[in-house]
Length: 208
Image (cartoon, rainbow, N blue to C red; front, side):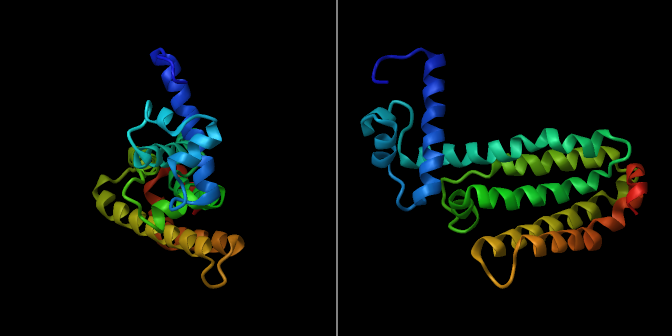
């Protein structure tokens, strides 16, 4: 890895570093993560890592982004059924995103904490945000009454905030929150905040 590499090989090795960094962050947490420990895991000297990244923060930034990209980049294909099938209600895509956020918090608990609990400055939520923005764009395309767009956006935002709080409670072990209760609360939030808008989507007729 110390030799001069082609551009293609450079990116191949960069991804290898990121994958190892994600695993290490999940094992030891952000505070105990270091380039020294990462280099030891990869079997290289710490200086080798600086051929690819400027500092620890840049590695963590790239690792958080990649973890969210893996989780919420892949979901885009899964959400297509809510927008492409005539029998599927597009608003239900937000329920699926909520479920995926809970799965992510369990699959990558340290990275979830880094972003939603510790709010580290090197964290990057852009893949997660892009998922929501892409979903709203697809929902808006099927909205038959554009005049209620602002109100719908507000209710979607409230739904997102509530779901994030539910996941947060489970992650921190607050109260009696668990996965079964989460599902009940998730559907209840949909019932109260988003279901009233189903009448503005032709595909939602079977979900009223």
